[in-house]
Image (cartoon, rainbow, N blue to C red; front, side, top):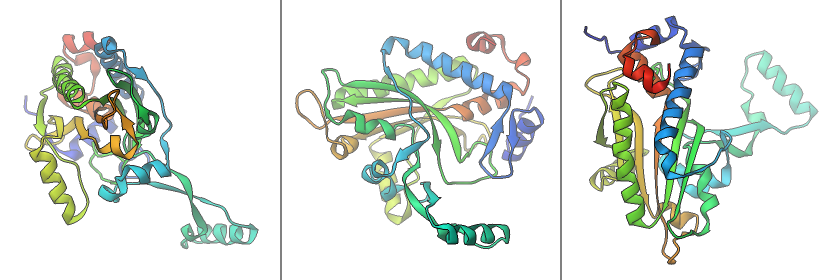
Length: 303
C-alpha cells in the first residue's frame, strides 16, 4: 500500500483521529489522549534502554534565566528562533492605555517590559550552569524531559513552536563524550527500528543565522559534530529528523567554567528524542488506529 506523504495529509489525518487539536496558531496544538499515551509509552521505552547508564534525572520548567541564554551564545547563532518573555510593569494610566489599545485592535506591546526569563530554546540549556566547577572522575550524565520553544510557525505539523524533548547530556573528557555519543547514536537507531520505523542516521547541521551561519553549518558538517536520525513522515525525499546528537566540543565547558577531574576544559554532548515527532512518525507509518499497529510495536510499547 502506497503512503501519501505531505504535510496536509498528515495534519488532516491527525486532526480527524483526534490525535492533535488545532488552536488557531501555526505550530501550536493540543494533544489527544492516544497521542499522549503513545508519547508516554515511548518515553518509558527510552527509560528502560537507558536504565543501566544510571543517569541523574533532572527536571526544569519551560522558561530559562535570560542570563543563561545570553551567556550560552544562542543569540549569536539562532536569534530567529529565540523567545523572550515580556510583561506589563506600568502604572494605572499605562494600564488604561493598554486595555484601550487591546480592545480597539491597536498595538500594545510597547507597554510591556522584558523580564528576566526567556522560553527554553533547547532542553539541555538549563543544565550547563549546574556543571560549573570540577567534575567527578568519569564526568556526569543527566537525563531530562523538557518543553522547548522555537519561533518558527509553520502549517507543517512536525514543525512545532513548542514541543517536548527527551534529552541526555554527557559531560567529561573528549574520549568519554564521543564514545557516549557514538553508543547512543546506534541505540537511537535500534530503538526506532525496533518499533518498525524506517530510521537511519545522517550528518546534519543546525539552522545558523545569516551568511556567517552558512560557514558554521559547513564546518559542523565537515567535523561531523551533529547527527540526526531521520524517518519519512511528510516526505520521502526529505525525511524528518526525530532524534539529534550534538557534540559541542569545549564550547559549553569554556562558557560555564566546567573542568574535568584532571583540570582540563570539559567537553559536552547531548542527544534529544523529539517526542511529538516520533509519535507522528508512528502514526504515519503504522496508521492512526493503534489497534492495527504491528504486534511487535504494540508489545514493546505495552499498548
